[in-house]
Length: 502
Image 1 (tube, rainbow, N blue to C red):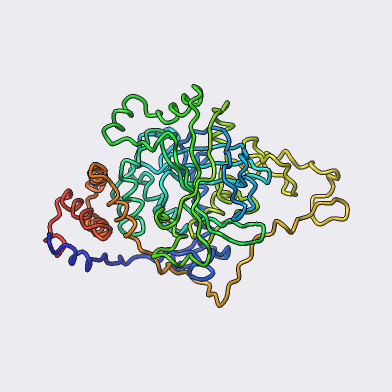
Image 2: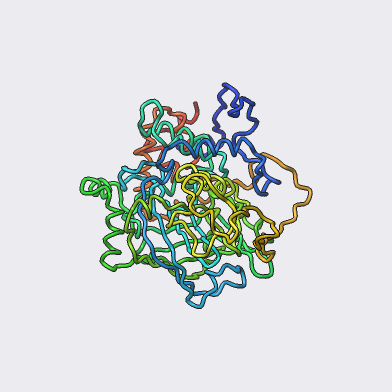
Protein backbone atom coordinates (compact mmCIF):
# COMPACT_ATOMS: atom_id res chain seq x y z
CA UNK A 1 0.00 0.00 0.00
CA UNK A 2 3.03 2.27 -0.49
CA UNK A 3 1.48 4.37 -3.20
CA UNK A 4 -1.87 4.65 -1.47
CA UNK A 5 -1.33 8.34 -0.70
CA UNK A 6 -0.93 9.19 -4.39
CA UNK A 7 -3.89 7.10 -5.41
CA UNK A 8 -6.10 8.56 -2.69
CA UNK A 9 -5.12 12.10 -3.65
CA UNK A 10 -6.56 11.63 -7.14
CA UNK A 11 -9.62 9.68 -6.03
CA UNK A 12 -12.90 11.55 -6.20
CA UNK A 13 -16.60 10.74 -6.29
CA UNK A 14 -18.59 11.49 -9.43
CA UNK A 15 -21.81 13.47 -9.13
CA UNK A 16 -25.00 11.56 -9.67
CA UNK A 17 -27.34 12.96 -12.32
CA UNK A 18 -30.93 13.17 -11.24
CA UNK A 19 -33.94 15.37 -10.53
CA UNK A 20 -33.59 19.08 -9.81
CA UNK A 21 -34.34 19.89 -6.16
CA UNK A 22 -37.13 22.40 -5.55
CA UNK A 23 -38.57 24.46 -2.73
CA UNK A 24 -41.94 23.55 -1.19
CA UNK A 25 -43.41 25.91 -3.77
CA UNK A 26 -41.85 23.99 -6.64
CA UNK A 27 -39.14 26.52 -7.53
CA UNK A 28 -35.74 25.05 -8.46
CA UNK A 29 -33.07 25.25 -5.72
CA UNK A 30 -29.78 26.73 -6.89
CA UNK A 31 -27.71 25.88 -3.79
CA UNK A 32 -28.68 23.42 -1.08
CA UNK A 33 -25.24 23.40 0.55
CA UNK A 34 -24.70 27.03 1.59
CA UNK A 35 -26.96 29.59 3.27
CA UNK A 36 -27.29 33.07 1.82
CA UNK A 37 -24.89 35.41 3.65
CA UNK A 38 -23.69 38.99 3.59
CA UNK A 39 -20.27 38.17 2.19
CA UNK A 40 -18.29 34.95 2.47
CA UNK A 41 -17.81 35.23 6.25
CA UNK A 42 -20.83 37.41 7.06
CA UNK A 43 -24.12 36.73 8.86
CA UNK A 44 -26.92 34.66 7.36
CA UNK A 45 -29.84 36.62 5.88
CA UNK A 46 -33.49 36.22 6.82
CA UNK A 47 -34.34 36.56 3.14
CA UNK A 48 -32.98 33.05 2.52
CA UNK A 49 -36.47 31.61 2.13
CA UNK A 50 -35.25 28.10 1.27
CA UNK A 51 -33.22 27.93 4.50
CA UNK A 52 -36.08 29.20 6.68
CA UNK A 53 -38.70 26.95 5.09
CA UNK A 54 -36.39 23.94 5.29
CA UNK A 55 -35.68 24.48 8.98
CA UNK A 56 -39.32 25.28 9.80
CA UNK A 57 -40.46 22.04 8.16
CA UNK A 58 -37.76 20.08 9.98
CA UNK A 59 -38.69 21.64 13.35
CA UNK A 60 -42.19 20.20 13.02
CA UNK A 61 -41.32 16.63 12.11
CA UNK A 62 -42.11 15.23 15.57
CA UNK A 63 -45.13 15.77 17.77
CA UNK A 64 -44.66 16.36 20.64
CA UNK A 65 -41.26 14.75 21.19
CA UNK A 66 -38.18 16.78 20.35
CA UNK A 67 -36.88 16.01 16.86
CA UNK A 68 -33.39 15.78 18.32
CA UNK A 69 -32.27 15.60 21.98
CA UNK A 70 -35.46 13.74 22.92
CA UNK A 71 -33.82 11.58 25.60
CA UNK A 72 -32.54 13.72 28.45
CA UNK A 73 -32.05 14.39 32.14
CA UNK A 74 -32.03 17.66 34.05
CA UNK A 75 -30.95 19.28 37.28
CA UNK A 76 -30.69 22.68 38.94
CA UNK A 77 -27.97 24.61 40.71
CA UNK A 78 -25.89 27.74 40.43
CA UNK A 79 -22.91 29.27 38.67
CA UNK A 80 -20.30 31.15 40.70
CA UNK A 81 -18.31 33.74 38.75
CA UNK A 82 -14.70 33.78 39.97
CA UNK A 83 -12.96 36.05 37.45
CA UNK A 84 -13.89 39.59 36.48
CA UNK A 85 -14.42 39.64 32.71
CA UNK A 86 -15.83 43.18 32.54
CA UNK A 87 -12.95 44.17 30.27
CA UNK A 88 -14.56 41.98 27.62
CA UNK A 89 -18.29 41.77 28.42
CA UNK A 90 -20.92 43.71 30.32
CA UNK A 91 -22.89 40.49 30.94
CA UNK A 92 -23.73 40.63 34.65
CA UNK A 93 -23.09 36.95 35.36
CA UNK A 94 -19.39 37.17 34.35
CA UNK A 95 -18.27 40.08 36.54
CA UNK A 96 -16.42 38.07 39.20
CA UNK A 97 -16.79 38.86 42.93
CA UNK A 98 -18.13 35.33 43.49
CA UNK A 99 -21.45 36.38 41.95
CA UNK A 100 -23.89 33.45 42.02
CA UNK A 101 -26.45 32.91 39.26
CA UNK A 102 -29.20 30.29 39.47
CA UNK A 103 -29.32 27.87 36.56
CA UNK A 104 -30.92 24.78 35.07
CA UNK A 105 -29.24 22.16 32.89
CA UNK A 106 -30.47 19.56 30.46
CA UNK A 107 -28.17 16.79 29.30
CA UNK A 108 -29.31 14.60 26.44
CA UNK A 109 -28.54 12.19 23.66
CA UNK A 110 -29.12 13.64 20.20
CA UNK A 111 -30.50 11.25 17.60
CA UNK A 112 -32.57 8.60 19.35
CA UNK A 113 -36.05 8.85 20.89
CA UNK A 114 -37.24 9.39 24.47
CA UNK A 115 -37.14 5.69 25.36
CA UNK A 116 -33.74 4.96 23.83
CA UNK A 117 -30.75 3.53 25.75
CA UNK A 118 -28.25 5.98 27.21
CA UNK A 119 -25.50 3.60 26.12
CA UNK A 120 -25.90 4.51 22.43
CA UNK A 121 -23.00 6.10 20.55
CA UNK A 122 -24.22 9.63 20.07
CA UNK A 123 -23.18 13.22 20.79
CA UNK A 124 -24.53 14.44 24.12
CA UNK A 125 -26.33 17.73 24.47
CA UNK A 126 -24.98 20.01 27.21
CA UNK A 127 -27.42 22.92 27.68
CA UNK A 128 -27.33 25.45 30.53
CA UNK A 129 -29.97 28.11 31.26
CA UNK A 130 -28.73 30.96 33.48
CA UNK A 131 -31.46 32.95 35.26
CA UNK A 132 -29.60 36.28 35.31
CA UNK A 133 -30.78 39.68 36.55
CA UNK A 134 -30.90 40.80 32.91
CA UNK A 135 -32.92 37.90 31.54
CA UNK A 136 -32.24 34.26 30.68
CA UNK A 137 -28.99 33.30 28.99
CA UNK A 138 -28.62 29.84 27.44
CA UNK A 139 -25.37 28.13 26.45
CA UNK A 140 -26.68 25.29 24.27
CA UNK A 141 -23.85 22.99 23.19
CA UNK A 142 -22.58 19.43 23.19
CA UNK A 143 -20.06 17.27 25.02
CA UNK A 144 -17.76 17.39 21.97
CA UNK A 145 -16.21 20.72 20.89
CA UNK A 146 -17.12 20.45 17.19
CA UNK A 147 -20.06 19.40 15.02
CA UNK A 148 -20.61 17.49 11.77
CA UNK A 149 -21.49 20.47 9.55
CA UNK A 150 -20.74 24.19 9.28
CA UNK A 151 -23.98 25.46 7.71
CA UNK A 152 -27.50 25.10 9.16
CA UNK A 153 -28.94 24.44 5.72
CA UNK A 154 -27.49 20.92 5.97
CA UNK A 155 -28.86 20.15 9.45
CA UNK A 156 -32.13 18.50 8.35
CA UNK A 157 -30.16 16.35 5.86
CA UNK A 158 -27.65 15.30 8.53
CA UNK A 159 -30.37 14.30 10.99
CA UNK A 160 -32.44 12.53 8.35
CA UNK A 161 -29.41 10.40 7.46
CA UNK A 162 -28.87 9.47 11.12
CA UNK A 163 -32.53 8.80 11.94
CA UNK A 164 -34.13 5.42 11.13
CA UNK A 165 -34.82 4.72 7.48
CA UNK A 166 -38.32 5.78 6.35
CA UNK A 167 -38.54 2.34 4.67
CA UNK A 168 -37.15 -0.07 7.28
CA UNK A 169 -37.52 2.13 10.41
CA UNK A 170 -33.97 1.13 11.40
CA UNK A 171 -30.92 3.33 11.84
CA UNK A 172 -28.59 2.29 9.04
CA UNK A 173 -24.86 2.99 8.57
CA UNK A 174 -25.43 2.71 4.81
CA UNK A 175 -27.49 5.88 5.05
CA UNK A 176 -25.39 8.06 7.35
CA UNK A 177 -22.04 7.08 5.81
CA UNK A 178 -23.54 7.90 2.42
CA UNK A 179 -24.12 11.41 3.76
CA UNK A 180 -20.71 11.62 5.48
CA UNK A 181 -18.93 10.50 2.30
CA UNK A 182 -20.47 13.41 0.40
CA UNK A 183 -19.70 16.00 3.10
CA UNK A 184 -15.97 15.84 3.94
CA UNK A 185 -16.30 18.45 6.69
CA UNK A 186 -17.89 15.68 8.85
CA UNK A 187 -14.51 13.90 9.18
CA UNK A 188 -13.44 15.71 12.36
CA UNK A 189 -16.69 15.04 14.25
CA UNK A 190 -16.91 11.44 13.01
CA UNK A 191 -13.38 10.83 14.31
CA UNK A 192 -14.19 12.20 17.77
CA UNK A 193 -17.58 10.49 17.99
CA UNK A 194 -16.17 7.04 17.23
CA UNK A 195 -13.66 7.21 20.07
CA UNK A 196 -14.88 6.20 23.51
CA UNK A 197 -16.00 9.83 23.98
CA UNK A 198 -19.08 8.80 21.99
CA UNK A 199 -20.42 6.92 25.05
CA UNK A 200 -19.91 8.88 28.31
CA UNK A 201 -20.06 6.90 31.56
CA UNK A 202 -22.64 9.38 32.80
CA UNK A 203 -23.68 12.97 32.28
CA UNK A 204 -21.55 14.19 35.18
CA UNK A 205 -18.51 12.52 33.59
CA UNK A 206 -18.50 14.49 30.36
CA UNK A 207 -17.12 17.89 29.39
CA UNK A 208 -19.16 20.44 27.49
CA UNK A 209 -18.65 23.02 24.77
CA UNK A 210 -20.62 25.87 23.23
CA UNK A 211 -19.31 24.53 19.87
CA UNK A 212 -19.91 27.98 18.38
CA UNK A 213 -18.09 31.21 18.97
CA UNK A 214 -20.15 34.16 20.21
CA UNK A 215 -19.49 37.88 20.59
CA UNK A 216 -18.80 39.44 23.94
CA UNK A 217 -19.49 43.21 24.08
CA UNK A 218 -18.04 45.44 26.81
CA UNK A 219 -19.44 48.73 28.13
CA UNK A 220 -17.51 50.65 25.45
CA UNK A 221 -19.06 48.59 22.65
CA UNK A 222 -15.83 46.71 21.90
CA UNK A 223 -16.24 43.19 20.47
CA UNK A 224 -14.34 40.05 21.43
CA UNK A 225 -15.17 36.61 20.05
CA UNK A 226 -15.61 33.93 22.72
CA UNK A 227 -16.02 30.16 22.93
CA UNK A 228 -17.07 28.32 26.12
CA UNK A 229 -15.82 25.01 27.53
CA UNK A 230 -17.16 23.13 30.56
CA UNK A 231 -14.62 20.85 32.27
CA UNK A 232 -16.01 18.15 34.58
CA UNK A 233 -14.48 18.10 38.06
CA UNK A 234 -15.54 14.44 38.24
CA UNK A 235 -13.23 13.70 35.31
CA UNK A 236 -14.06 12.91 31.69
CA UNK A 237 -14.83 9.18 31.79
CA UNK A 238 -16.25 7.12 28.94
CA UNK A 239 -17.33 3.53 28.26
CA UNK A 240 -15.74 1.32 25.64
CA UNK A 241 -18.03 -0.89 23.57
CA UNK A 242 -17.68 -3.90 25.89
CA UNK A 243 -18.41 -1.81 28.99
CA UNK A 244 -21.36 -0.17 27.21
CA UNK A 245 -22.82 -3.56 26.26
CA UNK A 246 -22.49 -4.78 29.85
CA UNK A 247 -24.05 -1.57 31.19
CA UNK A 248 -26.93 -1.80 28.74
CA UNK A 249 -27.67 -5.34 29.89
CA UNK A 250 -27.87 -4.12 33.49
CA UNK A 251 -29.55 -0.70 33.12
CA UNK A 252 -29.75 1.35 29.93
CA UNK A 253 -31.03 4.39 31.86
CA UNK A 254 -27.81 4.53 33.87
CA UNK A 255 -26.85 8.14 33.06
CA UNK A 256 -30.14 9.60 34.31
CA UNK A 257 -30.06 7.37 37.40
CA UNK A 258 -26.42 8.14 38.21
CA UNK A 259 -26.89 11.91 37.98
CA UNK A 260 -30.01 11.84 40.13
CA UNK A 261 -28.45 9.60 42.78
CA UNK A 262 -25.31 11.72 43.08
CA UNK A 263 -27.35 14.85 43.69
CA UNK A 264 -29.70 13.06 46.10
CA UNK A 265 -26.65 11.81 48.04
CA UNK A 266 -25.18 15.34 48.07
CA UNK A 267 -22.28 14.39 45.82
CA UNK A 268 -22.99 17.55 43.87
CA UNK A 269 -21.48 17.45 40.36
CA UNK A 270 -19.37 20.45 39.35
CA UNK A 271 -17.91 21.84 36.14
CA UNK A 272 -15.40 24.65 35.71
CA UNK A 273 -16.23 27.10 32.92
CA UNK A 274 -13.40 28.21 30.63
CA UNK A 275 -13.46 30.75 27.82
CA UNK A 276 -11.21 31.37 24.83
CA UNK A 277 -11.04 34.86 23.37
CA UNK A 278 -10.13 36.19 19.92
CA UNK A 279 -10.05 39.84 18.87
CA UNK A 280 -11.87 40.62 15.59
CA UNK A 281 -8.64 41.72 13.90
CA UNK A 282 -7.11 38.29 14.64
CA UNK A 283 -9.93 36.16 13.25
CA UNK A 284 -8.18 35.55 9.92
CA UNK A 285 -4.86 34.74 11.58
CA UNK A 286 -5.46 30.98 11.63
CA UNK A 287 -5.36 28.27 8.97
CA UNK A 288 -9.05 27.64 9.71
CA UNK A 289 -12.05 29.93 10.14
CA UNK A 290 -12.79 30.16 13.91
CA UNK A 291 -16.53 30.47 13.26
CA UNK A 292 -16.61 27.12 11.46
CA UNK A 293 -18.44 24.73 13.81
CA UNK A 294 -16.38 21.77 12.52
CA UNK A 295 -13.26 23.34 14.08
CA UNK A 296 -11.95 23.37 17.65
CA UNK A 297 -10.01 26.36 19.00
CA UNK A 298 -6.63 24.78 19.91
CA UNK A 299 -5.68 25.57 23.50
CA UNK A 300 -2.00 25.90 22.57
CA UNK A 301 -2.89 28.80 20.27
CA UNK A 302 -5.87 30.33 22.10
CA UNK A 303 -5.57 30.30 25.89
CA UNK A 304 -8.33 28.77 28.00
CA UNK A 305 -9.25 31.04 30.93
CA UNK A 306 -11.21 29.75 33.91
CA UNK A 307 -14.01 32.16 34.82
CA UNK A 308 -16.21 30.23 37.24
CA UNK A 309 -17.75 26.98 38.43
CA UNK A 310 -21.18 25.37 38.02
CA UNK A 311 -22.65 23.24 40.82
CA UNK A 312 -25.77 21.08 40.48
CA UNK A 313 -27.50 20.60 43.83
CA UNK A 314 -31.20 19.97 43.15
CA UNK A 315 -33.05 17.27 41.27
CA UNK A 316 -36.28 18.04 39.41
CA UNK A 317 -39.43 17.54 41.45
CA UNK A 318 -41.60 16.86 38.42
CA UNK A 319 -39.78 15.65 35.31
CA UNK A 320 -42.38 16.84 32.80
CA UNK A 321 -42.73 20.33 34.26
CA UNK A 322 -39.03 20.98 34.86
CA UNK A 323 -37.11 18.92 32.27
CA UNK A 324 -39.43 17.95 29.42
CA UNK A 325 -40.89 21.48 29.38
CA UNK A 326 -37.62 23.38 29.53
CA UNK A 327 -37.01 25.36 26.33
CA UNK A 328 -33.36 26.01 25.56
CA UNK A 329 -32.20 28.23 22.71
CA UNK A 330 -28.88 29.82 21.70
CA UNK A 331 -31.04 32.86 20.90
CA UNK A 332 -31.64 33.46 24.62
CA UNK A 333 -29.00 36.18 25.00
CA UNK A 334 -28.40 38.97 27.51
CA UNK A 335 -26.76 42.40 27.21
CA UNK A 336 -23.05 41.90 26.65
CA UNK A 337 -23.43 38.72 24.57
CA UNK A 338 -24.41 38.54 20.90
CA UNK A 339 -24.39 35.84 18.19
CA UNK A 340 -21.42 35.53 15.88
CA UNK A 341 -21.54 35.08 12.12
CA UNK A 342 -21.19 31.28 12.45
CA UNK A 343 -23.49 29.87 9.73
CA UNK A 344 -24.66 26.93 11.82
CA UNK A 345 -25.37 29.16 14.81
CA UNK A 346 -27.27 31.66 12.67
CA UNK A 347 -29.70 28.93 11.61
CA UNK A 348 -30.05 27.68 15.19
CA UNK A 349 -31.09 31.17 16.34
CA UNK A 350 -34.28 30.65 14.34
CA UNK A 351 -34.68 26.91 14.56
CA UNK A 352 -34.54 26.43 18.34
CA UNK A 353 -37.17 29.05 19.12
CA UNK A 354 -39.26 27.74 16.25
CA UNK A 355 -39.03 24.16 17.55
CA UNK A 356 -40.16 25.22 21.03
CA UNK A 357 -43.09 27.20 19.58
CA UNK A 358 -44.14 24.05 17.74
CA UNK A 359 -43.53 21.66 20.63
CA UNK A 360 -44.64 23.70 23.65
CA UNK A 361 -46.66 26.49 22.05
CA UNK A 362 -46.04 30.15 21.30
CA UNK A 363 -46.05 31.09 25.00
CA UNK A 364 -43.54 28.46 26.09
CA UNK A 365 -41.45 31.09 27.88
CA UNK A 366 -44.34 31.64 30.31
CA UNK A 367 -43.89 28.07 31.60
CA UNK A 368 -42.40 28.29 35.08
CA UNK A 369 -39.07 26.63 34.32
CA UNK A 370 -38.56 29.00 31.38
CA UNK A 371 -39.57 32.24 33.06
CA UNK A 372 -36.80 34.79 33.65
CA UNK A 373 -36.24 36.13 37.16
CA UNK A 374 -37.07 39.65 36.06
CA UNK A 375 -40.56 40.77 35.02
CA UNK A 376 -41.29 40.38 31.31
CA UNK A 377 -42.44 43.65 29.76
CA UNK A 378 -43.76 43.48 26.19
CA UNK A 379 -47.00 43.15 24.28
CA UNK A 380 -46.63 39.65 22.88
CA UNK A 381 -50.04 38.24 23.72
CA UNK A 382 -52.82 35.70 23.33
CA UNK A 383 -52.75 32.27 21.63
CA UNK A 384 -52.29 28.93 23.43
CA UNK A 385 -51.44 28.85 27.15
CA UNK A 386 -51.24 32.63 27.44
CA UNK A 387 -51.59 33.69 31.07
CA UNK A 388 -49.78 37.01 31.18
CA UNK A 389 -51.82 39.45 29.09
CA UNK A 390 -52.93 41.78 31.91
CA UNK A 391 -49.55 42.76 33.29
CA UNK A 392 -49.87 46.52 32.80
CA UNK A 393 -51.80 49.18 34.70
CA UNK A 394 -53.85 49.94 31.61
CA UNK A 395 -54.87 46.64 29.96
CA UNK A 396 -56.48 48.56 27.08
CA UNK A 397 -53.00 49.45 25.79
CA UNK A 398 -51.25 46.55 24.06
CA UNK A 399 -49.02 48.57 21.74
CA UNK A 400 -45.93 50.76 21.96
CA UNK A 401 -45.29 53.67 21.78
CA UNK A 402 -48.31 55.07 23.61
CA UNK A 403 -49.03 58.32 25.43
CA UNK A 404 -51.09 56.37 27.99
CA UNK A 405 -48.51 53.87 29.28
CA UNK A 406 -44.82 54.57 29.85
CA UNK A 407 -43.11 51.57 28.29
CA UNK A 408 -40.01 52.25 26.20
CA UNK A 409 -36.78 50.76 24.96
CA UNK A 410 -33.41 51.76 26.48
CA UNK A 411 -30.69 52.74 24.02
CA UNK A 412 -27.88 51.48 26.25
CA UNK A 413 -28.97 47.94 25.38
CA UNK A 414 -28.79 48.39 21.60
CA UNK A 415 -26.83 45.80 19.64
CA UNK A 416 -23.26 46.45 18.61
CA UNK A 417 -22.64 47.78 15.13
CA UNK A 418 -20.66 46.16 12.34
CA UNK A 419 -19.87 47.99 9.13
CA UNK A 420 -20.09 45.98 5.93
CA UNK A 421 -18.23 47.44 2.94
CA UNK A 422 -18.48 46.20 -0.62
CA UNK A 423 -20.31 43.09 0.57
CA UNK A 424 -21.85 40.74 -1.96
CA UNK A 425 -24.90 38.74 -0.89
CA UNK A 426 -23.91 35.20 -1.79
CA UNK A 427 -24.37 31.46 -1.34
CA UNK A 428 -20.81 30.27 -1.08
CA UNK A 429 -18.70 27.78 0.83
CA UNK A 430 -16.04 29.45 2.97
CA UNK A 431 -12.51 29.42 1.55
CA UNK A 432 -10.78 28.08 4.67
CA UNK A 433 -12.48 24.69 4.85
CA UNK A 434 -9.40 22.73 6.02
CA UNK A 435 -11.62 19.69 6.57
CA UNK A 436 -8.99 17.16 7.64
CA UNK A 437 -6.13 18.76 9.61
CA UNK A 438 -7.83 18.95 13.01
CA UNK A 439 -9.17 15.40 12.63
CA UNK A 440 -5.56 14.29 12.12
CA UNK A 441 -4.33 16.34 15.07
CA UNK A 442 -6.97 14.74 17.28
CA UNK A 443 -6.14 11.24 16.04
CA UNK A 444 -2.43 11.75 16.83
CA UNK A 445 -3.33 12.99 20.33
CA UNK A 446 -4.96 9.66 21.19
CA UNK A 447 -3.17 6.92 23.10
CA UNK A 448 -2.53 3.67 21.25
CA UNK A 449 -5.47 2.17 23.13
CA UNK A 450 -7.62 5.12 22.09
CA UNK A 451 -6.63 4.71 18.44
CA UNK A 452 -7.40 1.00 18.55
CA UNK A 453 -10.85 1.64 20.05
CA UNK A 454 -11.54 4.32 17.43
CA UNK A 455 -10.72 1.94 14.56
CA UNK A 456 -12.74 -0.89 16.12
CA UNK A 457 -15.78 1.34 16.76
CA UNK A 458 -15.59 2.96 13.34
CA UNK A 459 -15.16 -0.25 11.38
CA UNK A 460 -18.01 -1.78 13.38
CA UNK A 461 -20.41 0.60 11.60
CA UNK A 462 -18.53 1.39 8.39
CA UNK A 463 -18.08 -2.35 7.83
CA UNK A 464 -21.88 -2.69 7.54
CA UNK A 465 -21.93 -0.37 4.53
CA UNK A 466 -22.53 -2.44 1.41
CA UNK A 467 -21.38 0.19 -1.10
CA UNK A 468 -17.58 -0.15 -1.37
CA UNK A 469 -17.37 3.28 -3.03
CA UNK A 470 -18.71 4.90 0.13
CA UNK A 471 -16.22 2.94 2.25
CA UNK A 472 -13.41 3.96 -0.10
CA UNK A 473 -14.37 7.63 0.08
CA UNK A 474 -14.38 7.54 3.88
CA UNK A 475 -10.95 5.90 3.87
CA UNK A 476 -9.61 8.72 1.70
CA UNK A 477 -10.90 11.26 4.22
CA UNK A 478 -9.27 9.44 7.14
CA UNK A 479 -6.05 9.08 5.17
CA UNK A 480 -5.99 12.79 4.40
CA UNK A 481 -6.40 13.43 8.12
CA UNK A 482 -3.56 11.04 9.03
CA UNK A 483 -1.79 8.37 6.98
CA UNK A 484 -1.79 5.81 9.78
CA UNK A 485 -5.47 6.46 10.48
CA UNK A 486 -6.51 5.83 6.87
CA UNK A 487 -4.23 2.80 6.45
CA UNK A 488 -5.61 1.11 9.56
CA UNK A 489 -9.22 1.61 8.47
CA UNK A 490 -8.37 0.36 4.97
CA UNK A 491 -6.67 -2.74 6.35
CA UNK A 492 -9.55 -3.47 8.75
CA UNK A 493 -12.01 -3.24 5.86
CA UNK A 494 -9.75 -5.46 3.72
CA UNK A 495 -8.90 -2.83 1.11
CA UNK A 496 -5.65 -3.11 -0.83
CA UNK A 497 -3.73 -0.72 -3.04
CA UNK A 498 -5.32 -2.42 -6.03
CA UNK A 499 -8.79 -1.40 -4.85
CA UNK A 500 -7.85 2.28 -5.14
CA UNK A 501 -6.64 1.88 -8.71
CA UNK A 502 -10.08 0.98 -10.04
